[in-house]
Amino acid sequence: MEAKLSVNINKIALIRNSRGANFPNLLTFAKDCEEFGAEGITVHPRPDERHITYADIPQLMEIVTTEFNIEGYPNRKFLDMVVANKPHQCTLVPDLPDALTSDNGWDTITHKAFLIDTIAELQEEGIRVSLFINPDNALLDGAVETKTDRIEFYTGPFAHDFHAHKEKAIEEYTSAALHCNKLGLGINAGHDLNLKNLNYFKNNIPGLLEVSIGHALVVDSLYYGLKNTIQMYQNELKR
Ligand code: PXP
Image (tube, rainbow, N blue to C red):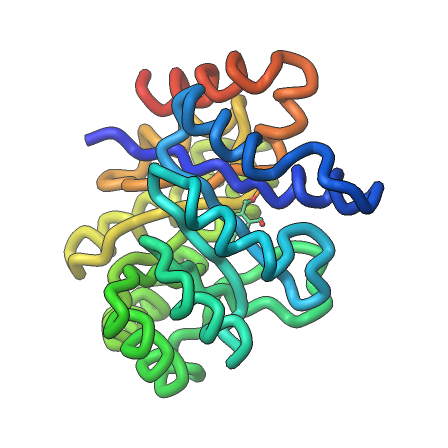
């Protein structure tokens, strides 16, 4: 089974917003990602809408033909928007409103009751749910009790430690992935994955279903072009 590549297009919205006009066009960029081989589009609207705006979401829903994944902290405004748009997947992230980027997974034990209610609300609308999480067996046991469909491993620490000691950096992720396989939790992953660390991550995570990649992919596309870059990421996922 091959892991799918979902491209996080937040950074394109950030560039667009920096000039106040519709350039680059987010919808064209999403369509081009799909045409060049992306199997999903991810957006992460933050409360200040500094990159993806709430107004972008229905327009993207209309044109995305692969898998559409909306990430974010599940406050009431976010949940109403997700339910109104019905993406294929919603990834719940425990971000503080002013977070620069996601930097931690859910404490599925402390927040179990909240997650159970939130996940049920989304699943009743036919939306698959994934929980952003650190690779920790106790937290994964907690995740199963929330009835989430999948988890998304927060791969920031893996990416950080990869250069110094990749065998050590992957260890807890592999062991947590095996635990997910036993528990029947689907596995996604994201954050700081790039052309150097992606193949090693994928080959050491049994059952990896999907990766969402934004920052490095957009930066790489400045050098290699979007089409080449998406194909390069796909090559890393396939070899
Ligand atoms: N997954 C989550 C939950 C995120 O918040 C982000 C960043 O928006 C990503 C994945 C993608 O991370 P990166 O931009 O480092 O590839």
